[in-house]
Image (cartoon, rainbow, N blue to C red; front, side, top):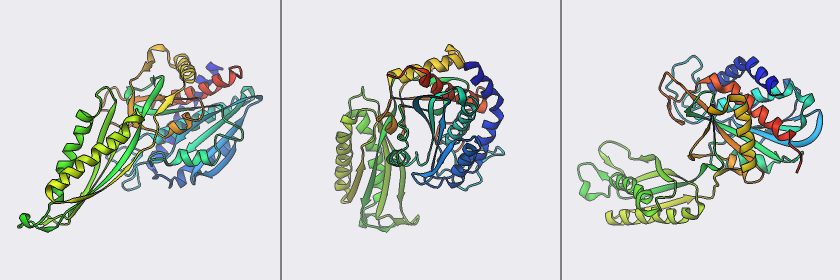
Length: 395
């Protein structure tokens, strides 16, 4: 079975790359993945699966029924892109203005379609069922996974375990990164409105300058992670947007900051929210301004089940050899795969897509790109992990 899966992965490598490039060229934002989901559904229908569309608005689920009775395993990929203007110049560069697959979801979708293709060719010897979950809206907090689960993707038949992966440009192509326990962080978000009094640039003493106040707030927020949280905690605060002002010679009467917090320990997040508000409160008061503070928390980290991640690790070793299966540190990405993993045993791994001979840009960068050489091995890993789980005795 292993050799057959590896051979099939090699045979369809060019198809996986072609699909990835097609999706990359035509990216769609969260809950607008209409063309992407139609492409996915069309390919799954061609493979002869039971296909259901429009789950969680634009999600797609397909069911492979094996030739023998058994358990059910799910494989999941996300499909949405980001509101980023792509700066790459390859022939499959995004044609949609200010929309880009800068997080690798095009690769995730193509890899899972590759795994589905491999498994369709050996379904007669598969023991049990395999669900293929193509999820929309991963980039929106508490988005796609919530709706997919509410609409029953883990039922009928009931899913016993789920596997997923995420590309990582920090790992070389044709490698897999794994970690037992918490592997990806969770996130909280905040919105801060700083409200002052506008005025002319020539009369700053008659105004309350919200841009100056906002700059002090941004700098001071870094003290939360540096001096207000136990340094043994893995934790980061990022201010992602600053919006305010009307003209070069006008003092802005309002500035809005938005940001994210990434963390693993949910016990600290209430204190962090309070610390942020205290900083905003004191800085605005010192300048005679007021503020509005909106804080949103409640996510969970992606936590790998010990048995499942060991199964995927062993599958990866058989496909890629031991030296290419790497123990990785925790990463501070947010991932709503965590919701599936909180309900059933799960494993989530990192697929290396780094280049050896050119610069590797990080996720969410306008020049993010991937080394496509390892995508077929990602498809083989998903396929072989699913078969390995189904071949284990039922507990």
